[in-house]
Length: 141
Ligand code: FES
Image (cartoon, rainbow, N blue to C red):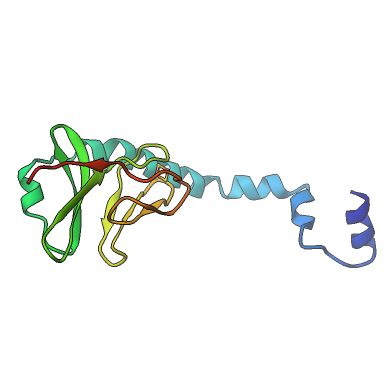
């Protein structure tokens, strides 16, 4: 507080001054609708993605160079088919908090819609907050 007051009295505004601004709570209230919208979207994915139909036949229908989440033996699998036609399967459950990932064809990556984790087609973590890779799965083509 002493350093901040010294800076403000001297006519300078340090970059960390907003951290101590007594109006900072107003900013959080102002951003509450966007925060609630985001949390609603997270909840929608968390529940809705689990209700999507799947099937083992869906694995055969995945085109080379693309990926899809399919349900195999009751489990959601993220299946990527490489350009040679080989299917690579990992768990579709994000290792952060369990949302289902979706394939981003432009990035060739599995992405979690809940908090933004990204994984390589083989399940390796590209970007957090997840720190553990997606587990490998057998889809038995
Ligand atoms: S649940 Fe996937 S990033 Fe949080």
